[in-house]
Every structure is written in structure tokens, then in C-alpha cells.
Image (cartoon, rainbow, N blue to C red; front, side, top):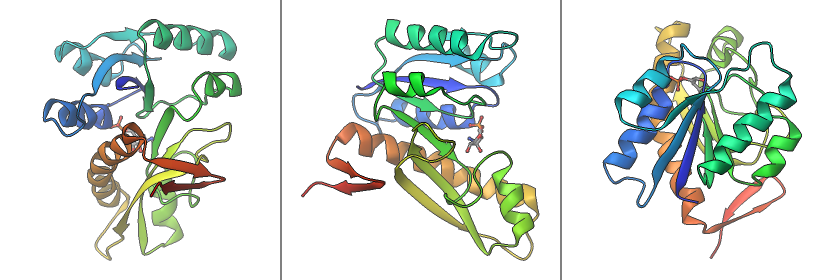
Length: 201
Ligand code: GRF
């Protein structure tokens, strides 16, 4: 369970925040077993290699979705991954993929779900005119940005904000939220009833 698999497609700042937390002892006992990208040029993959982590590129382009999912699941199992963290992974996981790791896949989304699922959530929230947005770490289920919520962090929208400044402040909270959520899940002291994650007494 404490062997993490990170899936990413781009910049990888959430991956770096998780790796920094592990190195600083903020996620006791955890290690990153493998970092996987579907894109060869993802900066996050270069960073993973610089940090001496096992980093794999499993290209998705031009491949049937089911075949790519099978390859990624095989790599995760080969590395004995117990918890999967999606960190800017720009692929929908198939129901089959999700079923391979029940309550073992987390995602981070840059809005207070269920508001603004999907792409460019920060821009969506800004354009809508909300006064508070934020980020959500949730379990992944078969629907997009939908599973039970583990941690949320609110971020006020300031009059002086534009989409970029708002997104930057949300990102700071994402980096804090992901470590918190991983600790909740690895701690195991919770039950999921319907959509609600509740601490066990
Ligand atoms: C983050 O905003 C995350 O919430 C979303 O994709 C972005 C990834 O950023 N799912 P990074 O690659 O972790 O820097």
C-alpha cells in the first residue's frame, strides 16, 4: 500500500510535491515505486529521472485505449504499487482499470468538486465569477472527477485575480492537499459510505 505509483502527462508539480513530502518524512513509510507518463516529453518524467526514480513512458498515442490501460496496469502491478496518484494525467481511466485497484486510485482536481469538472477548471471558475474556488483530492471511480472526496482546500477569488493568479494560488493548495489525502488513505482509519468518507471512531 505504501508503494506509490504516479501517473502524469505534463509538468509534474504535484508529483514533485508528493516526492518532496516523502523525502521530508511527511508521508511516513511511503515510497514512489514508479512514475509513468503517457507522453515522452512530459517534464515530470525528466524530473523523476533526475531524482533517481523509476520513470516509464508508455505512449498512448495511436493505441487503442484498452491496450494502453492494460500496459499501464501491468507496469503498476509489476512494481507492486499499492496506491496510485494521478497527478495531471490527461487520460480517462477505463472502468476495467479502476476495478483493478478499488479505492486505491486518487486524483487531484483544481476546483471544489462537484463544481467545474473537466478541463481548465480554474478558468471555468474564474469565468463563472465564483468568489471561492479551490482544489479537491478524491478517489477515482468510473466517472470523470467524481469519486468520494478525501480532502478539499478552499481558495478565495480576489478582485485583483486573473485566471493565472487564481490557478497559481490553487496550485499551492493542491500541493498541500495531496500529501494530506495520501496520509488519510495510507492511515486507513476511514470508511467510505456512499460518497462520504468518514473517520472511524
Ligand atoms: C493540476 O492543476 C491538477 O489539479 C490537474 O492537472 C494539473 C497538473 O499539474 N489535475 P502538475 O502537472 O501536477 O503541475
